[in-house]
Length: 292
Image 1: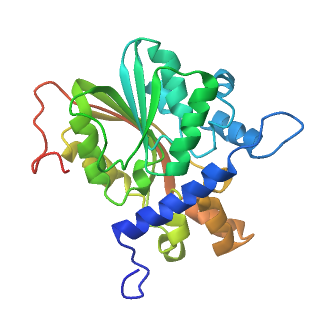
Image 2: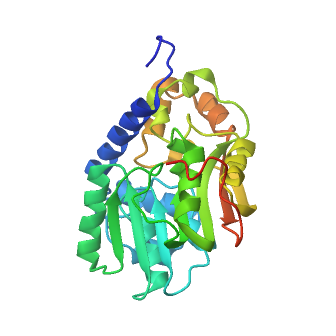
């Protein structure tokens, strides 16, 4: 914090985020069976609400879905067999495993996450699943451990909004994509400013609200990175308080208790959007280089 005003620098944000998601990784998701109706089944219920099919939810390794997403980027990514896919903030690997099924044995999926516990959990899931076309790398999405122009598709699910430098994330995505490569993100944006009590909460910042941008600023950051063909293909209200395993719900409960009206006030500020864009052939990189 600086000056006692509740302002947190980038390293502080990353520390809080890392700690929050390390806790989620350690907690995990109990099994989906009827004998254990806990977070596993709740995560699947949220998954269905945000666009995953029952087949999707059953197709991934047990424990890969931690209920941390806000949409299904795979549904609109138009993945093709043999493509290389990069997932920004891959968590326990849920979207990576779905992508791996679509790109097949000739394809490749790379997940990048900055939380060691998440990376290890994802690797354990991959070993248990026998995945040979998926790998998980420890790193920050603002400085991707991925080669230039090496990826066909970049996906992300409710992660860019918690980055302290979203513009840099999109510049990095532009850098690693091949010419003609596609960006497909599901994320949260703001329709209007948040209540001050939520905006200044470090715990909420570690989740998926306080650091979110206004929709126009979010789309502007994608364009400034050099992308073209930017299109919002879906937008809907998002039940933030229903997120499973996300520290946001806990922080909102601590801030507002059982005051459903206050929680609804926050939810009415937030939209879940799915955005696609293209690194068009001949598109110039953004001014200032790749932002590394």
